[in-house]
Length: 330
Image (cartoon, rainbow, N blue to C red; front, side, top):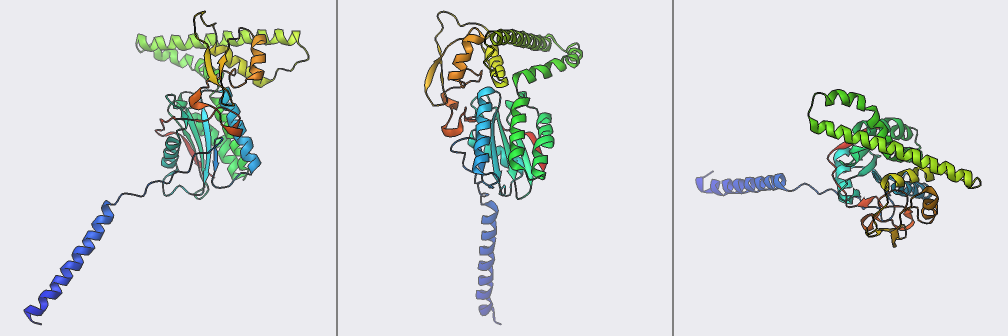
């Protein structure tokens, strides 16, 4: 082969090699495919993409979450089932979805997302930073092991979600939190003796809160017992009793004469004045008429209820999902 004939061949090889290198470089620097986040539920707080629940079961679960939201301001829960997490770990996937949905109240970051990946048979209870104050990672792990995993291993998905949601809210109940704080005071006393006055002051505040909670509950019980004696034919349910506890804790003193009335949005989306009730007897008819306004939960326009959901929405622009919670498999 002559020198003149070899030059085009070498040129073609160099051109081909350059083109291949360009393709490889382009592939290396191309951005990763964005996560296709499932749409947030239009109503309620359940997105069952894996189709694990019947319509009736989904409706019941939505109603449960709505009722729990009305009773407990410390947690805003939602449920998601998928067939895959698009190559993401279930932890990363759960955090991204919960953040994109705005799960929880804005500024409080009290969201909890319960996720099922049927493809990898993995489970996750994702807990936002604010919710971790009343639902620790250890609490989430216990609920995972005691309620969510056993139900999925048995194939009873609706029951697993129902028990998990119930335990999540009950664990974060204000009285339960106060009880845990009381149990931890003995250990805290030893710690306080070795650290500064600032931490000691925090312990004093916690003790005062626990004492006030106890006194408030005792006073509420006396009022309820008196009402039952005077109205023996009327049934006072446990949910009414818990709602009054919460209301009394949040309204332990009457508003001032010059204070503007509190306005909140009821379950129908109507803004109403919330009147102060000094006793159980004066509170009960208000609660019966507007349970979402007088249950002790904080309702406003940013987290009002929606549609047939029947309770305060779980989506209020929350965030703060930095990795709290627990994972499991089935």
